[in-house]
Amino acid sequence: GAVVSQHPSRVICKSGTSVKIECRSLDFQATTMFWYRQFPKKSLMLMATSNEGSKATYEQGVEKDKFLINHASLTLSTLTVTSAHPEDSSFYICSAYPIVSYNEQFFGPGTRLTVL
Amino acid sequence: GIQVEQSPPDLILQEGANSTLRCNFSDSVNNLQWFHQNPWGQLINLFYIPSGTKQNGRLSATTVATERYSLLYISSSQTTDSGVYFCAVGDNDMRFGAGTRLTVKP
Image 1: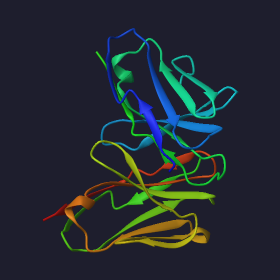
Image 2 (image 1 turned 45 degrees about the horizontal axis):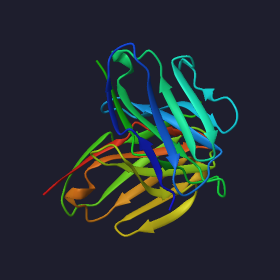
Image 3 (image 1 turned 180 degrees about the vertical axis):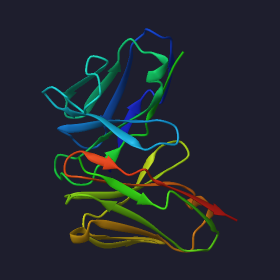
């Protein structure tokens, strides 16, 4: 149990376009999901906390108009990278806690975004 | 915010050797997890261990919450143990350490 999926796993887009990444909890419900970003050979950096039914909370330095987050249901959060530029190229990973136990966090397999 | 430090940053072992990875954190937390990131980027949950000791096969972990550190032990290492090991701590959101890159040579 406690599986988190992401779609797509890999995406290549042109500069200036927008890209949507989906994060789904497959076998549990989550009122809170998290979005991380990882550069090559670096650690994971928290970008934002996604709250079901309310606005996301962004970490300092993360542009909320650039990275739009929507958490429309207890099993789905989406991250939209708007007007993507090459510097947005990165590995994006989501995670979630099951509602029934706010302890162990489970991570999706990640989405590799390349902006040309 | 909370600071998380992992050591050593890199570790090279011969197959069969044992190792200890350390995670220090700057504030008390309710959640501490160890992960192994595989070559495809997937984070594999190893331990949820805000305190105490747990064992799972060749791996074990100990967290001393009062002293703000956690240790991950890998015994009889195998080449498949190679990869990056992360410690993450927090209450709600998780903060990651820089990781330990482990290479196990045959």
